[in-house]
Length: 297
Image (tube, rainbow, N blue to C red; front, side, top):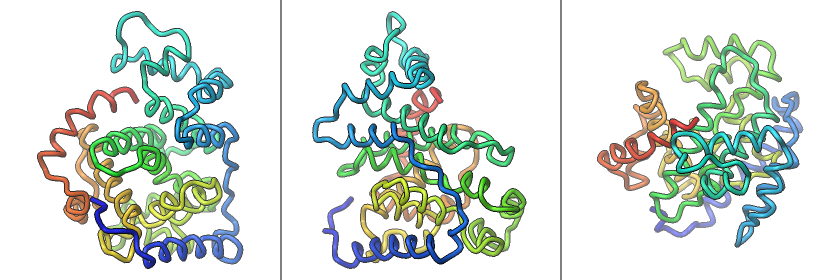
């Protein structure tokens, strides 16, 4: 999947994208976007997971520092998808039953939701859908060689984070969401840009940039609706891979909910599958295997 070495051009492209974000933050339309601060516990969690040998003790300590987060982990461990034998009663037992990847996903989702509140009827189930996408991304990372589970999970959670941030910061954005969903003559982000001179992909990338997430995640969020060049060598291969995986994850979560594939999948799903060397029978099998995990959300 990532057989070609990363060349100077893709690296430069990602670097230029980050520079553009920084410039727009100080001089462009992003000046008035309010970015919530990254939670301290999330920073500590990312640092503990980034070690060659993840610090499980620190992860457990972070989990127990917030009663509601502890309760969320224990509830997940005792859900039908994970329940086996006696109910778990401690964080250690919950972590053992869930495994590190799922534990980290639940904790990250909990902390991000606390930092970025969603109080709009236009964004109902936003974090539920983000969590499902993150679970699907983590699963796909286990199936695709050379893909970082941490990057996949993080991208899944943050992919559309620009939506609630724009809702909080941009006057009239609720009306823009209604308009963007209704229009058939232009894309969602084209409507956002027409009304506000920016869009949720740019704002989401800025959140990831301010929160010091991986540049690959920042770039993938920024480009996740710029799909006409998916798979081209002008982009960082890892960025293309995250974007392609995101399309697959979105497709699988929509299928899980009994919904039709979205417009991005209909236009670019074939390109995403080709980039990842994935076949239709793979998707059918993965849909079945993912069902139980998605049911936990």
